[in-house]
Length: 448
Image 1: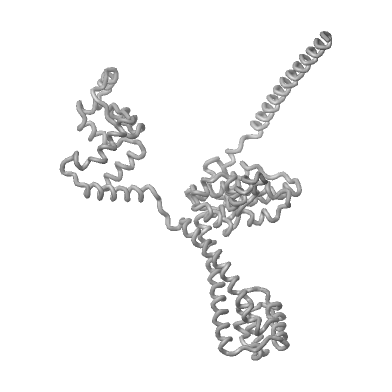
Image 2: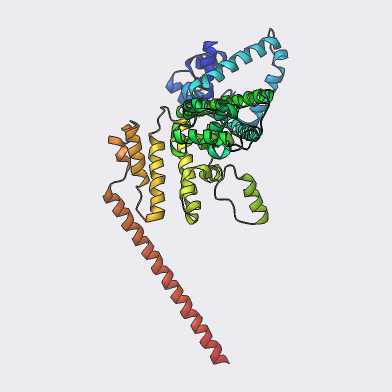
C-alpha cells in the first residue's frame, strides 16, 4: 500500500517514477522505444514510432516521452478506451474479481485523501461555525427567558426592574432576594456581591420595604427560583462559550479576529461556509456578505445596492460618518479578504498582519475625518512581516519589497510625460476637427 500510495502521488503530480519507467520499458514492445541510449533515441525520434502509449494526462505523457523515450498520446480515443477498460476490466482480465478491485480502490483512495489533506485538529473552522450558531441561539434564548423572569417576578417585586436594569444581575438578585418580605439588612453583603455596588444594594432594600407588589405562595416562589437559576446557568455557559470561540478564532483565523473581532470574524466564516470559501471570495463579495436579500431586491427594483453586510457590526463602520460609511466598509472588506487568505494559506499562525491591518483601518478613518495621510500599504505589510518574523522574503524586515524612492520618482516622471504627450495629441486632434468643421460651414454659406 505504501508503494501504491507513492506511485499515485507521483502520477497525480504528472511525474514518472523510476518504477513506472522500468515497468513500461519491460512491458512495451522494443523495450520502450529505445531505453537509455541517447543516439538510438535520436534515430528513433526521426523515424515513425512503432507504437504509442495512450495516457489520460498529457503532462504525464510529456514526462514519459522526455524521461524514457516512450511515445505517448492523449486524446478522446484514449479516454474512451480507458473508460471501456474501467467498465469491463473484470471480464477482460482473468483472475481479477470485482470485490478485490473495489476493496483495493477504496483503501488506496482513503490513503491518498489522508495524505493530500493535511488535517490539523487545532485549525478546524467547523467548530467555529457551530460555536457562533450556538452563541446566536443562546443570545436569543437568554433574552427571552430573562424577560419571562422579569415579568414573572415583577408581580411580586416590580420596583426591582428599575433599580437593576442588567438581565444577568436581575436574575441573580431575584435568587438572593426571594421573598421581599424576608429581605433584611443581613442580606446586603450578598446583594452587594451580586450588584457590585453598595448604594444599589441599599436601594433594593429600600424598594423592597415600600414595594407595591403582591405576595406569592411558596410553591410559586420555588418555580420562579428554579427558572431564574436555569437562566443564570445559561448566561454563565454563554460567557464560557464566548471565551471558547475567542480561543478557536485565535488558533484558526487570528488575523481576521484581530482585524474585526472574534464574533464578526466567526459570522463571516459561518456565512461563507468555511475559511477556505471566505478566502476565495473577492473583497466586493465580503463587503455585502449577509445582505443578499437587500442586494437582489435592489437589483430587481433598480435601486441602490447595499454598502455593507455582516461587517456593519464592526466598530469601524459605526465610528465613521454617514458619508464615509460606504468607503470605510469597502476598505475594511478588502482587508478582511487579505486577512482570511493569510489565515487560510499561511504555514505559521500569527496575528501580526491582522493587528497591522487594524491600524491601517484606524489610519484610514483619520484620513477621512482629518485628512491625515495614511501609511503606504507596502510599508505596512513589510512592518507586519517584520513583526511576524517573516522578513526573510524581503531582506531585513521585508523592506526590500518596497521600491527605492529614486525608482518611484523616475516611474512617476515617466507617467507624467506620457500623460502630457497624450493630452497634446488630443488637443491637436480637437483643433484639427474644429478647423475642418469651420471650413465646411464657410463653403455652405458661399453656396447659399
